[in-house]
Image (cartoon, rainbow over the protein chains, first blue to last red):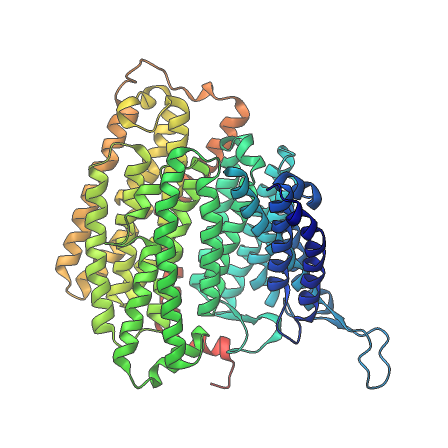
Length: 139
Length: 500
């Protein structure tokens, strides 16, 4: 679509949506959110970009083929499950690390649970974009 | 132990990721897919050995105890299904080396194939009914991708019928799960075994059982829900339809066996009699449908339907011997059916078509292929001493034991009619001369393609012969497996621990 208003607004909106999607991804552990919703939000941002500038431009901005992103996400999610074996736990047990923890403060907790969510995020972005961009180019 | 149960799912997923990233590299991706299937076979043999030694083994994913977390369980039935999945997967992966063109490879055939295997293994191993639903979805997505991959017109036509009907089944399944959860408050299958007995409204429970029966019935392609199968299985490449034919409907049969021996066993007078009627009609309609067809793979597709009837028959009779027959039949059938589809692919390569009227001359020019067709074809029809004979023998004996003479007669007549359509393929494709005077010799294929196509067929035919000539260990295995199915206490204890 060739619209000055849309392409000008897109420049701000896409950035906001992408940042918000990462925010949703990160808050997902204890509050509503997570990889799936975050991934959908990111997808909406990129689809908006594709509507404003065409799907070829969107593909170029992505750098990677959507399906490659999805499969990479699957690999990351799988890795998050497999990591548990290194610690002798059952498959998919969450592994936690608390760097900078002092006393009662949890510091900066990172976990394989987040890694799994990032995998889901990428699978959703890749899979949905593959469908949407595919349909967009069909017509 | 937990890893042994999770690996049959992890391995194909990991292979899928790697082969997808290598999808435009040709040989590397192809061989990696074969290697992944080889590893899966090794793991499934280990799993088989562990269940043989210890009975039922279970693992809680993420360390969340049952019935709250997701449990993976393997009893003998699950283990043998995973093993047979790995065997079929390996055979088809080797066959695909020569069968799948580069265009389909770059579109991701191998990755989808591996995801399909992961879905099938997951469905066999899960001990949670909602998780089973998730694996059905994984299978549906992967199989839909495989079915339409390449985008031929016939493929899309078959694909739409396939996906629409399977979506209906999925919605039914989900509805059933919701109702069951509303009644019992649990989704863990071992927990459900105890919980359904405490439900006050047993009538509603029977309704839920029938909802599940319809949902799995569509997947298993039983009468009258089978029509999507012959409409779609003859459209994709052989390396796709062979794995569909061998495995997908059998997941539906497995789910029926699992739920109707573990959960819905309160009102067997109603549910299992319904299954018995369905089994008889499935056998008859499938074989009659096949008689009317004149295309190699369409005949085979209708025979899947008719053979599913036999397995359901074993479940419906619900006696120890009948379940032995059902388990034996499942194992024998997957090998035979996948093999027949592989043979049909080679026949098409050599003669140029799947239409029986347009091909011929295979017996004279490629006697080796003819012999390899005869083994699974006669096994399917139940010729002694091939594997199908023992499978049918067990089921007919089981029906006679409970004095179900009518169903025994149906099973025997359907066996005869199966021979009729197998001889039709034999007479048309193998015996009569090729209508255009072609000589379909095997050496027309180049040496590597010949190896890749013939080796899996030979291996599966050998397995059929081994089962046929030494049925003893397989029957003993099926007996132990059936005993586990009829006494779910072991399964429940393995999942929920000693507390219950």
